[in-house]
Image (tube, rainbow, N blue to C red; front, side, top):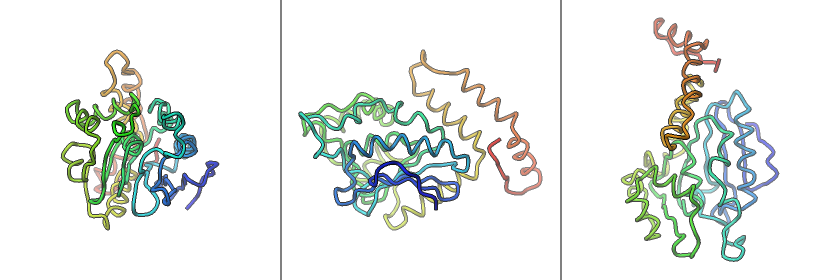
Amino acid sequence: MTYLELGTEKLVAEVEGTIGWITFDHPERHNALSNEMQRALPRAFDAFQRDDDVRVVVMRGAGDKAFISGADISEFDDGLPGAGMSRSRDDELAPLEKPLVAMIQGYCIGGGVAVSLGADIRIAADDAQFAIPAARLGVGYPFFGVKALVDLVGPAHASEILFSARRYSADEALGLGLVNRVVAKAELEAAVRELAGQIADNAPLTVRASKFAIAQVVRDPGTRDLDTANALVEACFESDDYREGVAAFLEKRPPRFRGR
C-alpha cells in the first residue's frame, strides 16, 4: 500500500495494486466535508490520473457510520457552506479520466450526495441514508449538484428530493436510480473490490473512451467534444491492447492489457 501526501489528515489517498483509494477520514464528525478536504480532493485525483498503475479509483468514508454526512457546519460563514461547494463539479473532477466508484454506507447527506454524484458508479450498503437538506437549512444547492442530480434521476425525482429535504433509504435510492446497487453492509467492501477488480482487468483505453463518451452524452449537444470522443475510439483500434484482446479471445485465455 502506497500513501500519497495531500497536505491534510482528513483525506487519505492510497494505492493498492491497480486501485486508488480515497478515504474521507473524519469519523468523529461522520466525515463531514470540510474546505480542507475539498481542496485536497483534486490533488488526489491528479495523483491517481498521473499514476499509470492505477486503473480505477474508489471513494469511501472512514468508520462504519457515514460516507459523508454533509458540509462541515462548523465552517459555515454568513449562512453559506464552505466555498468549495460552489465550485463546478467539472473543475473538481476534470483531472480524473479513470473510473470513479463511490462506496457508500451510513449517512450520505447534502455535500455527500454531491460528491457521490461525481462518481461514475455508486454501490451502497443497506444501511445507507440519502438526503439533500438544503431546504431545511435555508441554503442554495449549487447548480452543478442540481444538474448532476437531474441527469441521474430525472426532474420529477430531483424535485421531490430537493423540495422535501427528506431522507431516503438505500432501497428507495436504488428505486430512484440514485445508486447502482445495494448490498448487505457486511458485503459492501467485497462487492466494491470485486467490481473494481473487474474494471481494472479490462482495457484501460477502452474504459477511458467509454467514460469520455458518456460524459459527452449528458452535456448540451452544442458543447460536446465529438472529435475527441472519436479520436479515443480510434486509439483503441490502433493500440497494442486491441491486438492483445483479439489474441486472447482466439487463444481462449484472459487478456493482459497494458494501457497502450
